[in-house]
Amino acid sequence: MHVKEPEKKPIIIFGAGRCGKMCFDKFEDEVYCFADNYKAGQIYCGKPIISFDELCQIHQDYNVIPATFDNNEIIIEQCNSAGITPTYRYRLGCRSLQDDLIVEIKNMYTCCSSKHERFSLELSGNWKNDCRLLMEYKQTIIDKMIKNEPNDCDGCSFIHHDFYCDNPELKCFNIAGGRGEHCNCKCIYCNVPKLNAFTDFGEYTFMEPLYAFEDYITKDTLIMSGGSEITVSPYKQEYFNFIRRNQCYTKFLTSGVLFSEDIANLLKNDARNSLCVSLDSGTREIYERIKRVDAFDAVVANLTKYRIFSSNITLKYIIIEDINDNENEIDSFFEIAKSIANNLMITVEYSCPDSGSDKILALIEYFFNKAHETGIFAHSYAKSFDQSTLVKVNDIRKKLMYSKVNNKVEFIR
Ligand code: SF4
Ligand code: SF4
Image (cartoon, rainbow, N blue to C red; front, top):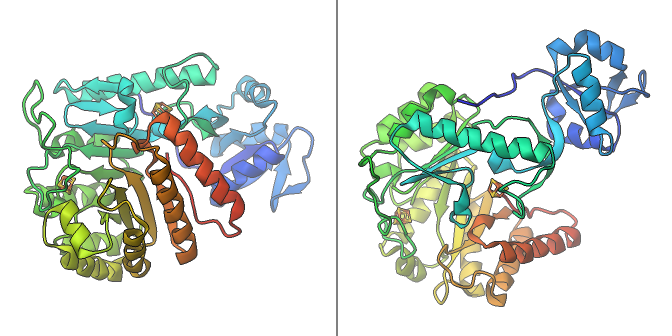
């Protein structure tokens, strides 16, 4: 398969200027020093600057990142001609394209969005081959992005400048392979039972793709699994063992209706593990209307217990028209969130016909303002929005970012 992860080594940033500073901010703990064609002998960001000749002598022991805004191709060429292969380059790209692999019932995706179905690949049952095809497809787009050539991602608002390597990696593996058959909620927005559960090659459990790709999972891989409730899944012990065996980490997407000692221990033993619950409400009544189970008190109690083991807890609020789309419910949600969560996510129901309405945008803004006041980090699961709405959602973000001194508001891809 076409996955090449840069070997972990200390970093030398080639270019001691503004772009080099951005690179330093991103990789700070891993940076050994800077290199520069004109500033050797000086100090930058508290690190020494070495000359290009010195870089040529020691580069084998380091990951080298060229970092200039204007002359990046020139210094990349300078590196290449000296036999130095840069690890990352500053360019346009997309984090999902670089890192994600998503398996969803019948398809595999480059990015986590049903709004971007042009990037799906129908599962054939030959997992390794499907994965290879998708990674090759990603590589093709990345190659075109590097050369500034037209590509299938053109126009997507998730594209932005950052330091990306030239190959896709497999850092986030999201298996939505469950079919809702093992769940203790009946969410009104659940689309799982509506999907045709059977692929052309039959049924599979969400463990199958995990086992098929195990060779490519490293201890830095984040694994997420959805579409089923892990605490009532017959595969839960296999899943927990898989995480332990590979020393990778996971975000437990759980309803929170049941408390799991295994999850609590995994949260306690690896600070990277986290928990995410869609509460979608702040009151028992609205919770029951959305989840269609009488479990509000149990969920809040279980979250409070999990909080003893980890602060890495995300509470999600999915806006559903005419049910929880009001400020009072959001206020009640924050009353619970402030003692439990360190991370909040707001989004809108996937099938919402007008996710970009003024009302929904105003609620998103209200949510972020509350998050700021409460001091909890908040982001939006932006992929539930179509492209034109995303532009508006990003405008809200910009407005908040520029108006807040201690900004805790951020959007994810
Ligand atoms: S640029 Fe957009 S469409 Fe392309 S992989 Fe990223 S999120 Fe998906
Ligand atoms: S928790 Fe997930 S799988 Fe279960 S009913 Fe809700 S959306 Fe569907």
